[in-house]
Image 1: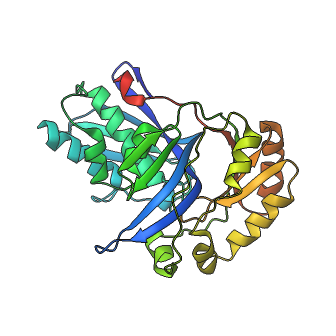
Image 2: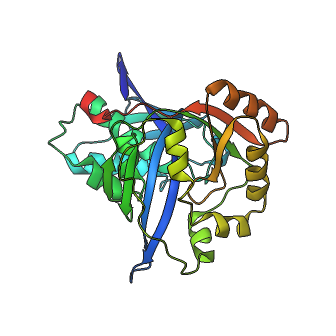
Image 3: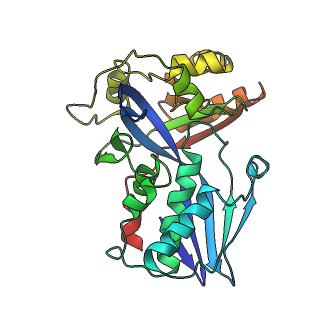
Length: 297
């Protein structure tokens, strides 16, 4: 959701979590087609945009040092693409508060780009009919269309096929990262040809226990190749499974962030405090409510 205050618009770039991720095949162009279930945590990066004489980007927050404001930064690319699409000058200062780890399997760069598109569409008062933000986002990254939606959804193709899942219950998650960046391309480079089938639910689960039961018959096809690149992932998964109240532990995306699903947020916060003592980044969060961010533009 984008929140307007005076001449500043803020938007949240929520953490993307793959509850399952099946690799279906490899296309002739080298891209892999996927079937995945995305949810989004309330824990997020924050984008703020305000009018200025020229386009600029300031990065702050705990993970600011991991990023640079280069010309090809996904945030600046998103701003320029939107400005070009509606033929205006991007005279805006963008401030990114980077709370999420970088190259972590949480869609951080894509979520940031999506949040910029939402925030600038509001700041520049662009009508939803004037530009297709989803199509624009696909030119930035395959996760951007889903991050624009920021609600539970199935994702297919190479990221362009999105199907919202209304009614999926919110639930507590614990996100844990070993502090190691893991590039998606390198993980796919280790992936062989052990393809899976699509595995979408026939019915939307109404409880956390029903959801976990369904997820236990699904998996993340990138977990094994990611562990080959980063052995710390296996250590985190074992530690999550040992914490009280953890119902399921799994890798998100291409890693290296893992998640645990818990029955209540208190157990998730207690586990976070425990795992932080091991030197890992750990944050407990609730999954975000289903919403359509562009309806507020």
